[in-house]
Image (cartoon, rainbow, N blue to C red; front, side):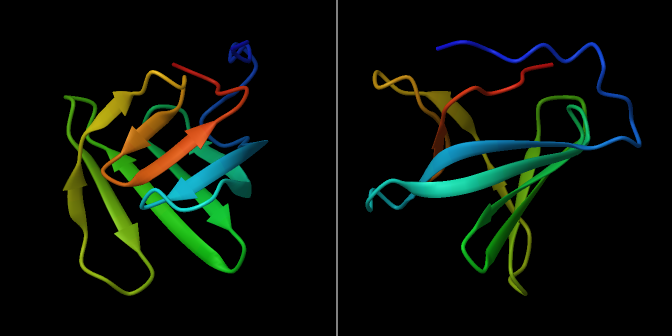
Length: 97
């Protein structure tokens, strides 16, 4: 899987990347990853649903879905080359910090 270069992404620029997303082992569907601050704040837009992620820089990642309370999630890579956070999976040209 090719990874996008991130040298040009600055804290306030933002970057949008088209990906495929899967929720709770459902079908894969088009989505958009938007990075507001590399390694700190990003979100996935899946249709009308927005999933916000925040990292504290020490390995803790929080997911906020709609109006729900934030919950801690753990990132893992799957054998299918997808990056997942507790039931939310993405695949495509992922920019990594």
